[in-house]
Image 1 (cartoon, rainbow, N blue to C red):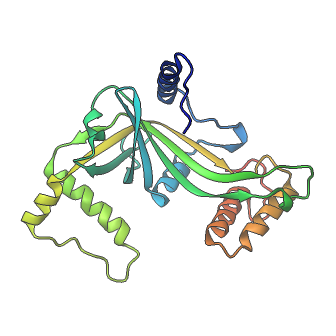
Image 2 (cartoon, rainbow, N blue to C red):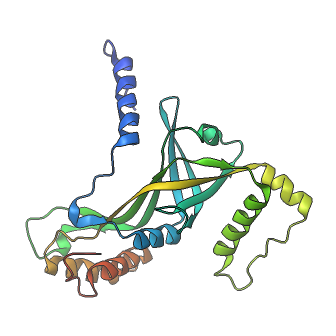
Image 3 (tube, one colour):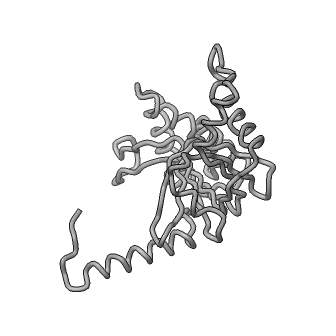
Length: 243
């Protein structure tokens, strides 16, 4: 990374960083109207499908991020509540409980879209994706029985697809020791933002060609994106209003 060596360069960079942090706290994600999704059930669905997310907070004026698995309690609060945990050695949790809002970013299906797939020219490349931004003030969970219940729910959710799910039948003293090494927390959500950018701004013919090309790919991530586009826009890509 290049360093600004001009007079006042370091101060300018720090000021720019402070401005960026302030923007993080107050500005919503950029969402053109055709890509905006407000249906809470759809947003919760994506959170559950892609539950490994990025938690972003600020400490001492700097952004801090952790990659963590989450549960969503759909009916807890106006917009739902996220529940998670992190290593106690991760100092990010020490900033919980104040007035600072956290941002949790859930990334769904995504992929490159080549202009060579369109029938409309000239055109440029783009990237299609689904994402949810969730906001709220995190607070630490202290109750030991609740922490155990959260962990059991998280394990059960992620073991459910296995032929022989692991039952979390651990010795009690070992489990207590492991729980002592983590910090559980919840984030009652103050708002949710959904952006499903799936070629809604392109003509129907272009959308159909994008879906067909992605669906024919050998890459499972591209086929998953095609399926997401079909759900959002109809199997023929012709539903212009999207979700």
